[in-house]
Length: 73
Image 1 (spheres, helix red, strand yellow):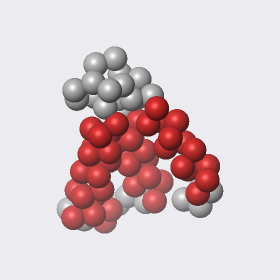
Image 2 (cartoon, rainbow, N blue to C red):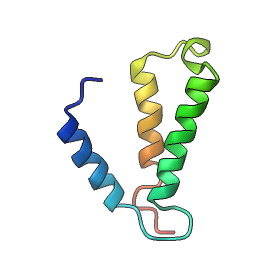
Image 3 (cartoon, helix red, strand yellow):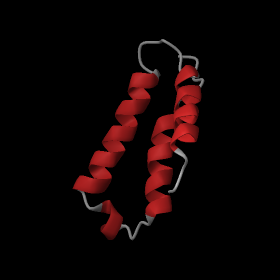
């Protein structure tokens, strides 16, 4: 996606800080969802089966990272 590495790391740190230290909707859960999406996309060949492009792939991983951002619990 040609994203500047420093900008990406700053973004991830900002998102990470928005996750509350609660039992489930926390930053570990967000990382797990993003990794699970990656596993299914790559292992299940979703890229070709779903005719996904790099933006689709990035959007899905991005959504996994932020899906519970600032969720209260």
